[in-house]
Length: 236
Image 1 (cartoon, one colour):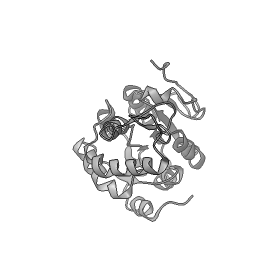
Image 2 (image 1 turned 90 degrees about the horizontal axis):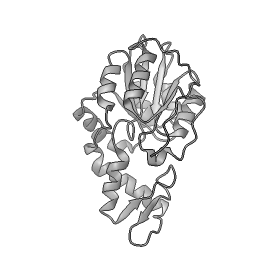
Image 3 (image 1 turned 60 degrees about the horizontal axis):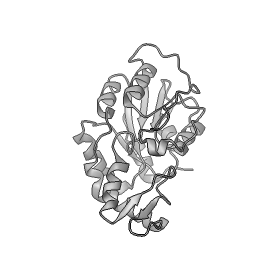
Image 4 (image 1 turned 135 degrees about the horizontal axis):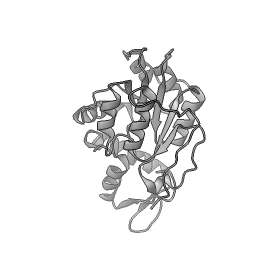
């Protein structure tokens, strides 16, 4: 799959040091609370999110009848949410502090699948949180975008995301990347099977941040290699 022209232009405009490690980080549900804010947003429309599987599609229901909201309406709801609320999302505990620390040792790029039209609001939201790092907006699998951002880099590359398909896509396109599967919402994490090719699976920035620091040289030397797996404790 090729990148959109918008994503290509953003990647081409990046100015990154190729002599430093690179950390590429997702935003929704990794840096900011998407699900929590989205639940508040749809509640005002008498809808609720049923966390019966790792998906929004099929899991949004009408409060009065319990009926599923059709996929076309779900897509519309998500689009309206990004248009109206992207500017105001709150940080996940520890995300800002750890990314600022990691940024002392590595280049950081934020890679987010949201409508390109919401990019300005997302950048302002991140700046307000103290994260003035490059943001790339993407659509579709993230492997091609990560490969394009990384270029001919010789230093370590770390990718962190909550989505198994996106992590698998990066593993396919950049097989030497260190992959962090971040799942802080246990209602959804309980549905997933651990991925065998990740460096770490966690729901905590304390754990994710210290692991990434070790990988990029900001902590004691890590013995972890791609494929070693640490899992979440059982859901409560």
